[in-house]
Image 1 (tube, helix red, strand yellow):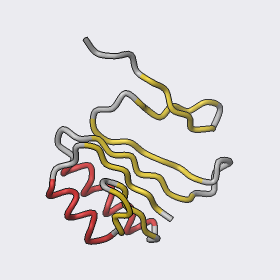
Image 2: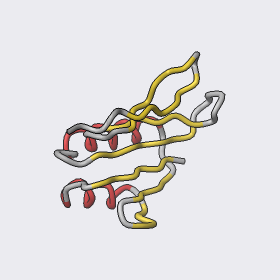
Image 3: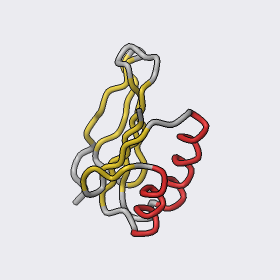
Image 4: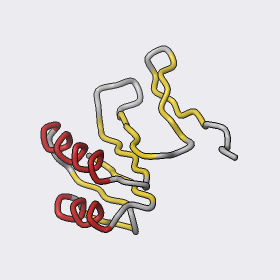
Length: 94
């Protein structure tokens, strides 16, 4: 299982994601794909995100049962805490 959540994504990226994944809510895409296809989608997200932000989560053999990665400008950033991936909040930019 793979979930992609977008915020302020350009129309070109949203259209590209809609080709591969089902958009269940505005900016929320889901699907079941191999690691190879997930990496292809990841590459497209990384190259087309522009000023938006995206989080991609997928099932993985970790203690949590999933892994995730973020792209673009976002206050939330993944951090490793003794092998467990958590989310830290950056301070507001003035």
